[in-house]
Image 1 (tube, rainbow, N blue to C red):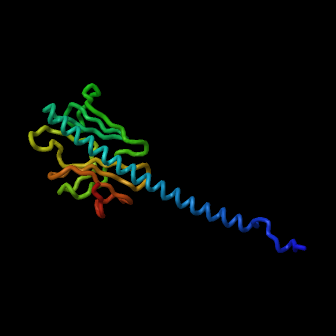
Image 2 (image 1 turned 30 degrees about the vertical axis):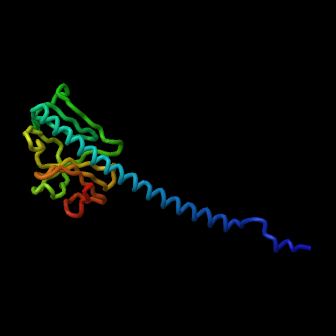
Image 3 (image 1 turned 135 degrees about the vertical axis):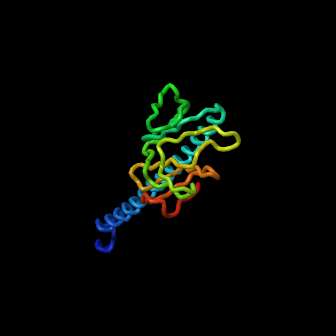
Length: 182
């Protein structure tokens, strides 16, 4: 006859709890990694989109042979037929183009741009584009985008020599450290 104590018919409660705890820990780590990867991807996309928008605005300034004003606020960036100044009234009737960043991203100002423009500048809210034949109409400067409340930033930079998009993860607000060109 078989001894009832030697035959095991299932798992003990402790074994089941250990397996559930391990699965919970692994899935928690996976979700955190996935969120971080999504944030990294979205900030890079926002930087690329702003850089493409600025290149399109520069081409439009040259095509129209007019000064254009690019204004960034909140999650919107717009191009107007006007010259930028802090006191100038920009009328929506002069709107040429606009773009809204994906949910969660927004423009920021007052933070230092990467020192790529050969002059220390802060992120801008307005930039005047002046048409010039054979030369980019965009002056030196940058527009900076932040993803949500994270410390992930992208910057669309115009230096005297080139137009590029950079991103930085774990940005503390200063220009020091490594910015990555994308």
